[in-house]
Amino acid sequence: RKEVEQDPGPFNVPEGATVAFNCTYSNSASQSFFWYRQDCRKEPKLLMSVYSSGNEDGRFTAQLNRASQYISLLIRDSKLSDSATYLCAGTSGTYKYIFGTGTRLKVLA
Amino acid sequence: SQTIHQWPATLVQPVGSPLSLECTVEGTSNPNLYWYRQAAGRGLQLLFYSVGIGQISSEVPQNLSASRPQDRQFILSSKKLLLSDSGFYLCAWSVGVAINIQYFGAGTRLSVL
Image 1: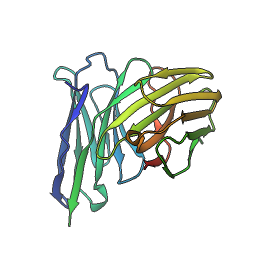
Image 2: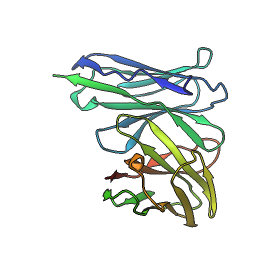
Image 3: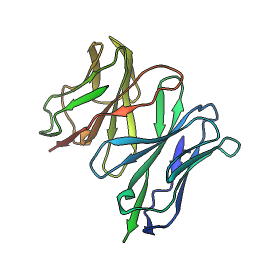
Image 4: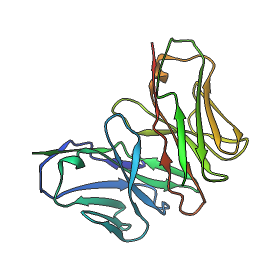
C-alpha cells in the first residue's frame, strides 16, 4: 500500500459546482498535511496546510480525519482557473514529505 | 522574501552524458533542501535532501548524486545519464523542523535521448 494515495481522476465538474477530493495516508505518525496545486508543466504551489482538524481559505476547505487517516479538500463555486492537479502530502519523519500522485480537476464552462 | 532559483529550465542530453543541475535559495539561512523527480503522469519522488552543508540523505539508490557545497546551494549530478533519468526535476526548500512547509523551484525538464 502506498503511503499517500489519491484518486487520479480526472474530476470533470461544471463551473460553480462544489467538488471534493480525498487523500488517504498510512503513516499514523504523520503530523502535518498539505495540499499543493500543480498546473501543467509547472512546479507545485502550496494551497493549504492542515495541522489539526482543518483549515479554510475562501472557497477552499481542508479537513483532517486522523481516526480514518484521510484528508480532504473541498472547493466551492469552482472556477475555470481551478483546473489543475491537486497533490496531497504528509510529513514522514522530521524533514520529509510523502506526496500522493495527484488528482486532476477539470472545471468545464 | 525568499526565492529559489533552478536552472536550466529545459535540458536535452544524450544517453551516457553527464548531468549537473543547480538550485540556489535566497533570503533565508540554513534551509532544508530537496531534490524531487516527477516522471510523466507520476507523483513526486524524493531523491535527496539536505539539512546542512555537506549533509546529504539519499532516498532512492540510482544513477544520481547530490552535493551541497554552500549553505544555499544544492546540486544534482550524474556521471552517465540513462534513458530512465528523463523527467521533471524539482528543487525545494523549507526551514525549521516541526512544521516545515516546502516551496518549489520552477523545475528542470530533462529529456535523455
